View 1 (tube, rainbow, N blue to C red):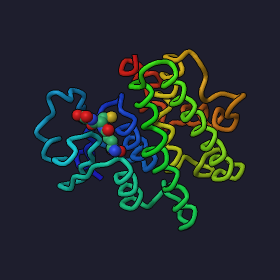
View 2 (cartoon, rainbow, N blue to C red; view 1 turned 90 degrees about the vertical axis):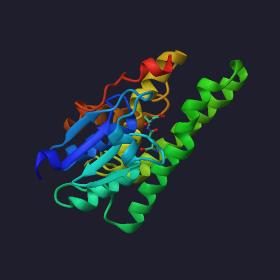
View 3 (tube, helix red, strand yellow; view 1 turned 180 degrees about the horizontal axis):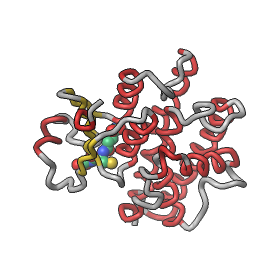
Amino acid sequence: EAITNIKVLGTSTSPFSNRVEIALNIKSLDYEFIVEDNFNNKSELLLQSNPIHKKIPILIHGDKAMCESLVILQYIDETWPDGLSILPSDPYDCAIARFWATYVDNKWFPLMLEIREAMGKDAKKVVLQNIIEGLDQLEEAFVKCSKGKDFFGGDNIGYVDIVLGCFLGWIRGMEMMLGLNLVYEAQTPSLAKWAERFLSEKVVKDVILEHGVLDFLL
Ligand code: GSH
């Protein structure tokens, strides 16, 4: 592929945008990264490509534009099937991976937004408890999905790794904000080790700013 044939509209502080870059790295694809970090002044290209949500990330492949990070991950996996795959090839494993990705995006991550909005100590405590319960569930999911291997996807980074891994910056930011640990050896031992492995992977390292989103949180 010519480098100009693949464009990503995104910003390095967005976990959703990070996902797309990691997926392209897994497939060893070059791409042009178009920074869209001023949401008060979105480019014409962004507004044209995602008129419904007006959000990043957006993948433009040739003259085809698409949005929603989970949709984009699947497109990348199906369009460039060579090399490592992102979604599991077994239909049941794939269903389970999609289940957990949806869980992370629709159920768990919204709690990270909710805790900022929660008024007062007691309300925050309730949300925090839900965040921790969610992480316990993800710890269990990791043990089941990884089957003793390094990643949710097995030997290599896959769908759920990318989806959850891109929130590690938020998790670390939240830990600093609240002054406590969320993903750590004593509470979520498998996830704690997984997090370290994930962040030190070649395809991830240059993409994720570990504390990059801290500014938003504080
Ligand atoms: N569900 C979307 C996905 O998975 O791609 C979420 C994307 C999203 O929330 N993007 C944010 C955005 O573009 C940046 S992290 N916000 C622009 C705005 O709110 O105006």
